[in-house]
Image (cartoon, one colour):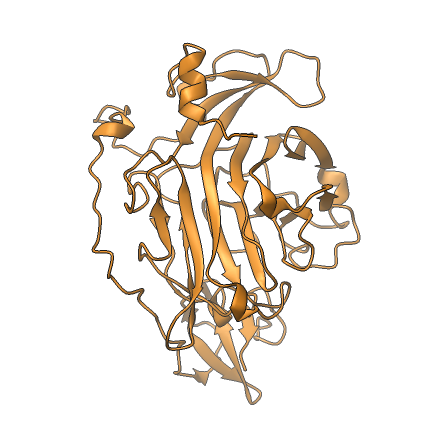
Length: 369
């Protein structure tokens, strides 16, 4: 079936892209709705970078620093992240001539975040073993996992028909979930064959995951381990998009399938309105100074900076320095230490305390090879 552009559909309905649209909650007949608060439909010209008023690039070597023993370096090259001129953002995972893997990872941190609501994206995922495309959200402040993580869509190439969604927080940050905090949904076709709409509806007492409007998992505070804390009422969350290459979960990539693309039609966020009314201004994040208007220029007027097509991706080598771990010491993300003869990489910036030895706190330290 031909793909319909978001903006064109709204125009046909007589609704502007910036207009708030009330959407009833999944599986409810009450008054609560979600009203559109933010959107990017990637309307930039072919070869342009992601809109810098909405997105920030994560950069660097992913083997240890991204926490999952991933292979790729994330870059801001248009070879890895670009708008295609047809209303899509394209994230491309590649193997470079020097044998290293590159890909792209974007986030709205510092540009947009929101507490509660509907977070959705229409995506055609890449196909192939060893790839892990993801659409997810993290808490604005604090270190992982205390700030919370919501995985809206993840897929691994070994299971091409299955989408996974889950949460991570303090005391429930790893895999092997036995409490029911995460779920999965298997379609009758491979996800990479077409676009699908992946979403969560996040309210004060639950998070609901859906694919193409079909709700497949609901998680509540009752689903996290006893004695742990539900951190999803604490603060706004920002969005992330990325394609990881290799790692603990997806396994090693198959080079013959690369390059592979994740194509994103749009990303949209709607505010949660328990009474079905327009939310107060304080429920929408404001990224502009309070003395300046909060409105943004139309997408067609924003400046676009297009780097030369030949711009090579920047490959950052992994850190090499390794001092002995000490308590009462400030450590930065990516810093390497040794402890009991083994090297560890700092996953989140923190100040160490007695008892926080790397071998004891793997949420802060990742064993390095």
